[in-house]
Image (cartoon, rainbow, N blue to C red; front, side, top):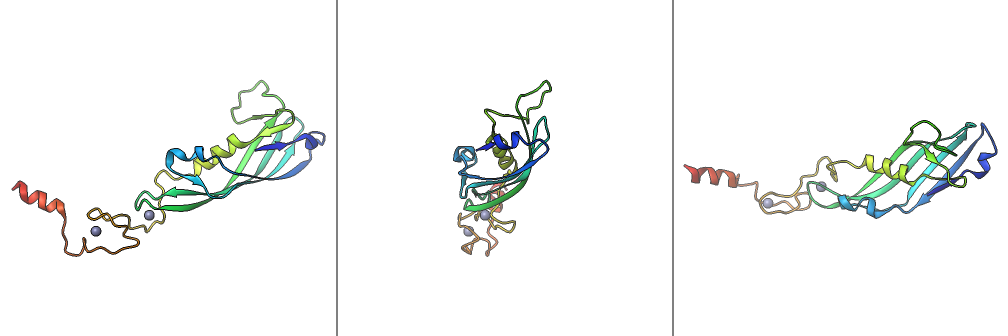
Length: 164
Ligand SMILES: [Zn+2]
Ligand SMILES: [Zn+2]
């Protein structure tokens, strides 16, 4: 996802709006079993300060994640603020966040992916109230009511009885 700053390059102390949209890389989410359901949308206002470009805006997308309790896939929508800096050269200072322009183009995807990744919960839940799977019969307790809990049967008590 590249931002073309060629025309803004000529206009010091001015700003330009950018609206970009691209399909996310599913390989970014494959380790956690997720995938993109909607394009990654980026809205940015980029200012030419004279010696660098400062962009402010928002990133939004929707991904599929697997619930840690019921193991069902669910939609996870995210929207987050984004600030980025870009410049013609990396300069003398060390700044890992700085995007170095290539032929007036700023490749912003690595920064966008960083933001997206930082928003993914470590233990995703389809809902705070998710009842999860029954530890005895394995049914999804959001969908089915099993009778396991009803007779107060707990295999751990059986184990304890056997120990006596
Ligand atoms: Zn769930
Ligand atoms: Zn059950």
